[in-house]
Image (cartoon, rainbow, N blue to C red; front, side):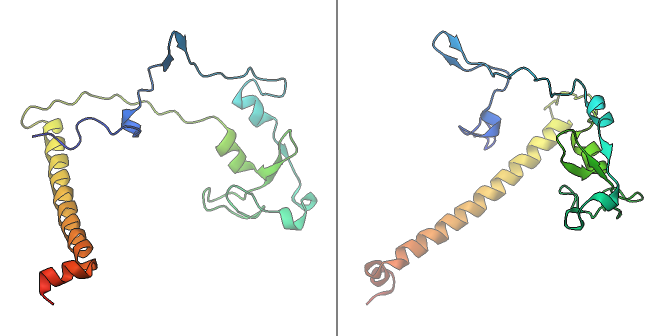
Length: 169
């Protein structure tokens, strides 16, 4: 019996092999990233240090809202309770809320974790997972089968000639 999750549909995310390179004849197509220009910050920390606090009273009343979190400057953000969102100016002269600028442009928290390979012999986590996935796939397949049967009946009943064949004139 073929398992429904075996293989991958063309174009699906699981069909992508991100480690391989696409080949067109002898040429390898590789991504091209332009070199940074003189306006690029050397590090995220340098960027964060460049944020210039903007006095709230100097920001136009209609522009006193962070475009990221939509919190009015001077008010406490839902995403960072406890301290008000205050405006900062970037080197390009755009103004954002400081907490949002730090969160969106700042150093990312990197979480490392170890992945254990799954084993599939009876009683293992891998075996239990596959059993659950198989059960779900069978259930979905049965549901789709019932749906397709009902759809087929409706398709047949849509035609007056077929209606007469099913139910008589």
